[in-house]
Length: 230
Image 1 (cartoon, helix red, strand yellow):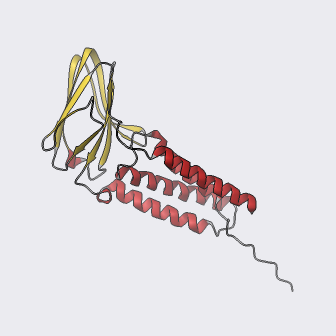
Image 2: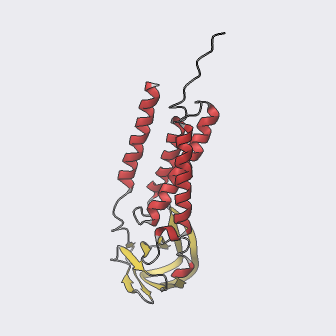
């Protein structure tokens, strides 16, 4: 039992360290490299220089457009929305030009899914990224926020319940699943509150850490029934 408690405490300490490493100010995430320049405009919030801006604050009614220029010919360009460090394709173009544009995009078409969007773009020799935050949308008014809260609560309840299960293989599998769910929910909530940059792949550490904790905590408070004497 003492050994199990040491493992549990070590897992919790690991999670705390992970949180301290991942939760950092979102400023400084915007960047444009490769000698290119990029700018964007929002119909209500105004223009932004993507080469110097750290975070782009917009509102639900905004319609945004972007433009980029390169010192050399670019043959391809891709635009992605990033979550937990994984890019989801938004635009893919082929060509042979020193200039490019994207849009128009209505913020209202996307902010019911998430209010914090990490957008990354790459071309033949340039790349860039910017963090977009929709100021007038609440974290729990998006699908990501709602699902994150539900997942975190269900996962936490499952982890607490697993403390009293018999420490068998099946209970550890259940513990890993609910722990993963809890970690995933926490990660989504942190992204929706703009605490965690969705482009930060370390965010995947939350569901992984949850799964590890779920592996070791089942049965911590389980007590075997004493054999009855006849």
